Image 1 (cartoon, rainbow, N blue to C red):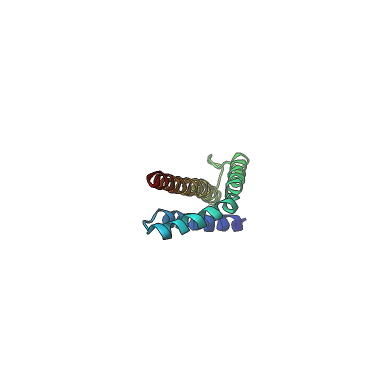
Image 2 (cartoon, rainbow, N blue to C red):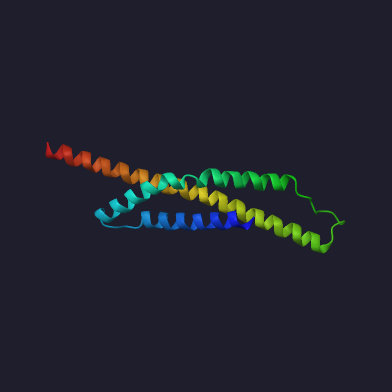
Length: 129
């Protein structure tokens, strides 16, 4: 069960590194290459969205069908196990949401960079005429 969360954590780390790389100031030639490479990687990385959505649904289903340990009937060990599972579920929700949010941020940054480049080319072409 922990493998999917480790994979999602690695994907979030890679997305954070790519977002940092795309937003760092760089010369135009280097920035163009970074944006082009990131643009090529966006389509395969889109698979993280349904994966994270499925994981969120799994967390929700497990929450709905989990035994509640809120009364005095539970032992201290059961209460600790219940709280630990709740903390893990909250951490995993944050992980899924951050994966989707980082993907969206990278997508928008790349799109804006491409739009800016297209506008600069149009302006350059109009000045030459």
